[in-house]
Length: 282
Image (cartoon, rainbow, N blue to C red; front, side, top):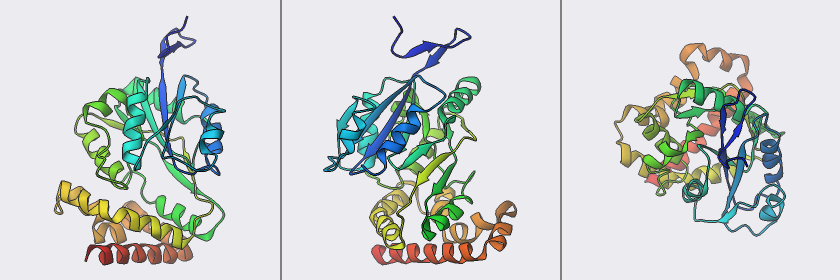
């Protein structure tokens, strides 16, 4: 009988269990694509854990076709993720949102990097997909953030996650940055090439700004926690880096010149985000 936490590879080496933790609330339009992408992974020793914030649609009903590990928990994403980690049996945790779709080799590549190079956590590149104009703008913006402090790890060794206390449940939005910083204090992190697709097909300017407004209160808490003069805070939330530095460093400014319409729209979006923060902070 196979151990629940391992299966044997062709080389007769244990293949660690990966716990994929998905947080949801009324995600019936997205959840099945996410679940299918997990089932279609080239790596197979996976358990799927859904932590649902009391959805009133068919999110849980759809999920039952893929896993029986479905739990109810709120009030926000940080608490949901921590609860999922407590229920997880895997050596590694992969945290996903319901509107994310994994390319087929994501988990296999994560395992290879983590096991061979002893990384305690990994960055996974993300690409925004969808048909609206603002989806294209968000994908353009995201392309500048790879390899910068604006990214955060998603694939994490469970023992390390628990050791540092998991996500800060006082934060919603910047909890990823906060965890990323604490992870780096205890071990080395790496990066894979396989992509996570972030499906924002229905993204509109109004919807995006509403979400940013929701995160503003936590941003203030995050700044207070690490200090306004902290060098990482200055890059993640400082005006110079977020408006200029991240877009021009390492020759990235050429991308702005090649896509002037997207660049103009991106800066318009960022100005609107900044005004929301200023207004709610005053």
